[in-house]
Structure formats: structure tokens, C-alpha cells
Amino acid sequence: MFETALTSSDLLFLAQGAGMTLIVTAIAVILGTILGVVFGIFRFQVGPWWAAPVTFVLDIFRSIPLLIQLVLVNAFLGMVLRISLSGFTVACMVLTLYTSAYCAEIVRGAVEAVPNTTRRAARSLGLTWRQDMSYIVLPLATRVALPSWIGLALGVMKDSALVYIVQVTELLKSTQILITRLQEPLFLLLICGAFYFIISFPIARFGGYLEKRWSND
Amino acid sequence: MIEIENVRKSFGSLEVLKGIDLTVNKGEVLTIIGGSGSGKSTLLTCINGLEPINSGRIVVDGTEVHAKSTDLNKLRRKLGIVFQQWNAFPHLTVLENVMLAPRKVLGLSKAEAEAIAVKQLTHVGLADKLGVYPSRLSGGQQQRMAIARALAMSPDYMLFDEVTSALDPQLVGEVLDTLRMLASEGMTMICVTHEMKFAREVSDRVAFFSKGVMAEIGVPQQIFEAPRNPETAAFVKLTQA
Ligand SMILES: Nc1ncnc2c1ncn2[C@@H]1O[C@H](COP(=O)(O)OP(=O)(O)OP(=O)(O)O)[C@@H](O)[C@H]1O
Ligand SMILES: [Mg+2]
Image 1 (cartoon, each protein chain N blue to C red):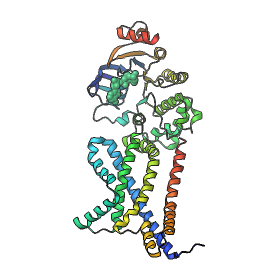
Image 2 (spheres, rainbow over the protein chains, first blue to last red):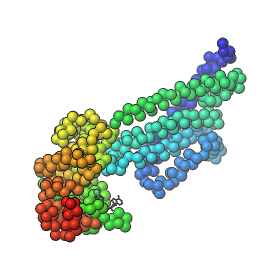
Image 3 (spheres, rainbow over the protein chains, first blue to last red):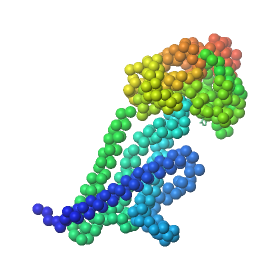
Image 4 (cartoon, rainbow over the protein chains, first blue to last red):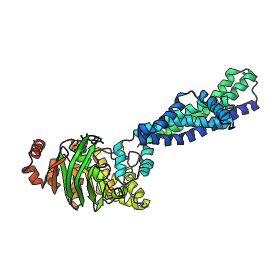
């Protein structure tokens, strides 16, 4: 049989790390999606020219590696603005903006994919811009965006491992701590991977379920 | 009454409507014929304010469509419009498609909206398709659904933009029959169409558009048998050949 020095309190420690991963991811995905929808619709609505400043900022968040963003934002807040925020807050902020930058792109593409004629049909029935958005455009765009959005959510969960750099002990960091102590890297990484899988599997399945349901339309 | 006075409309540097004057009376069926790109669709989208105009004015029952003070969403309740294609809201069932505007725009209760929707869908022969999604309908059924959806708002005018031209030939008849039915019920209609036989049968007047100008307007018999404008004559001859 397999010998391990892993105790139940170590397992609890890992579970806490997984919990941290889940919380940071959930906050980033939820807030990032809300912001992403706003930015995405804004970019679509005002056209490329007026949206240029927003697009530029979002492009920065999409193109600079997350690790660097975390370090720079943390340093900027602490050393330049002299605001002391917890690593957790900084991690959530940066990851939220990072998510929103990708989400905005997904939303813009999905809104553009709604045929103009369908929107004209809605407006000619007397629906206002808001009603057209809420009852026609967003439901249709959601169907288009869903697969990419699920991919984004899963990606953010994995990328959230990088928040250890601002002293947030999430799943991967907890695993590393145990590896250093117990010297059982393969076994611990296996457990760590299993935790990641347990978190992502329901998200992926839920996405698959929605896609299937909507394909009946 | 729809009064169109000297309406000009450009897309960029391209002038698509070059001074259109036209009055459509209550209860009248007007069909618009003309070559591709002559501005027919553009005129319809200007009438319900989907497109701005450059000069002139369009007045619907005393309300100037393009005046700043006009509440377009309110005005559009009077004007039903059905386009060539992609009219359906694909994520809603047939019943929900028709109920949406009565509920959200007119503020009716679910039960009231449903009663109206069922009535209009029955009227166009879709009573057995209420719970079906539009993707399961034929093109002809989709167009009839779009007509029912517009009628559910109890419009005073109906605008049809080549509602049969994206359909397979065997489906054209059922949609034209629906339009005939509306005409016989006294609905005021403007129909842009390529169906000359239909235009001839149902219209009170036929307008011929050419390159952004209304080249000729008259009763069907005159337009089709004794056109005064040589372009009308050529067009009529071509489409009847
Ligand atoms: N949104 C738009 N932007 C730029 N040009 C447009 C737009 N809509 C129409 N046009 C142009 O305006 C002209 C008139 O178009 P319109 O659709 O009114 O013609 P039509 O008479 O309906 O033709 P068809 O029989 O092909 O439908 C065409 O040259 C067309 O390319
Ligand atoms: Mg047209």
C-alpha cells in the first residue's frame, strides 16, 4: 500500500486553499462579467472610434502577463498611492479587471452577432433600446457567448494560481507549502489537480447543459 | 393618413430618396414596385423612423415622424412592419414572439397578451404552432408569425417589405393569401413587392420607384396596361415577360 505523511489537517489546509481559489475566482468572474458586459456593450454601441480609450485600457489588461499586473498594481497601490490593501483585495481587483477585459471582447463579438434585422424587428414593434437589449439582444448574445465565457471562467480559475505573488495562499500555493514540508510532490500535485477538477467540472457541465438546452430553439 | 412630403434621404454621398411625395389614405392598399436599389425599403424604414431623413417630412396621423419631440416608440405601435427575412426572435416560442410587444410595450397582463397573441396567430393559421420555436417553422410560417406579431399591436398601418421574396415558390402563396385577407379586412397597407399579379389584384394604387424617384403612381390597371412613364413600361414589360 501507499505510504504518506499527509494528515487530515494537511488535507484541510489544502481544502482551505481550494476554497480561496474558488472565492477569488468567483469574485473575479462575477464582477468581471458584469464589468465586461458593460464595457462590451459600450464598445459596440459607441463604435470603435469613441471606444478607443476603453479598448486601449482593456488591451493592456489582456496583453500583459497576469503575474506582472499583480506585482505592478500591488506596488503602485502600496508605494505610489500609499493605500494599504490586503493581498486578497488586490488579487480580486486585478483578476476582475483581467476577466472583464476578455469578457468585454466576448460580449462585443456576441452582440455584433445578433442580426441587425432582428433588432430592427424589435425596435419596429415599439420596444425601446433597453427593452431590445434585455429581451432580444442579451438573450441571443448569451447563447453565442456561452462557450467562450465558460472557457474564460475556467481559464481565470487556473490563472488565479498566480495570486500567490501578492501573498494569497490559494490552492497551488498551499500545495507547494506541503510539498516543501512533506517531500511528496507527485502525490500532492495529484490531489491538487483533483481539487481543480472538482471545481471546474460542474462549471463545464453546466455550460454543456445550457448549450444543449438552447440548441433546441 | 400617411403624408410624405418631398422626402430626401442619403446614405453618405449616395442619395437614395430624391424628393418623394406620396399620401396614403386610411383603408388604402398601396403597393410599391421598382428595380433593386430604387429606395423602396429605405422609404419604409423612414416611415417608421428607423432611418432619419435629410429633408422633407413624413406625417403619420398628424404626427411628424422625424420631429425631435416625437416619441418614436409610441408612434411605432401604429405602424406594423414586416421585413423580407430574419423577423423571428429565435430564442422565443411562436407564442412568446407575439406576446412580447403587447406585454412590454403596451404593458398588458400575461393573460391579456396571450389572448391577443392566440387570436392573431389563429388568424394567420398558426394556432397549432404556439409552443414551437421559429427554427422549426417553414419560411412561410415564419413570415405569417411576423405578421401576427405586428397585428398583435393593433396597428393602424401595416408596411410589408418584400415579405415573400426570400421564400421558396411553393410558400409564397400562403403569405400572399394572408396579405389578401388583411386587405379585404380594410387594413391600410403599403406593400413593397415583386409579385406583380398580387400587386395588380389587391392594390388601390401602385407606385413605381426608379433610382430614388417615384416615377409614376396610378391605379393598377393604368400602371400595368397603360404606363405613361417609359421606365415603368420597360419594368412592367420585363416583369411580365
Ligand atoms: N444602411 C445603408 N447604408 C448604406 N447604404 C444603404 C443602406 N441601406 C440601403 N442602402 C443603399 O441605398 C440604396 C437603396 O436601397 P433600398 O434597400 O432602399 O432599395 P430597394 O428599392 O429596397 O431595393 P431591393 O429591391 O433590392 O430591396 C441601395 O443602393 C443601397 O445599397
Ligand atoms: Mg428592399
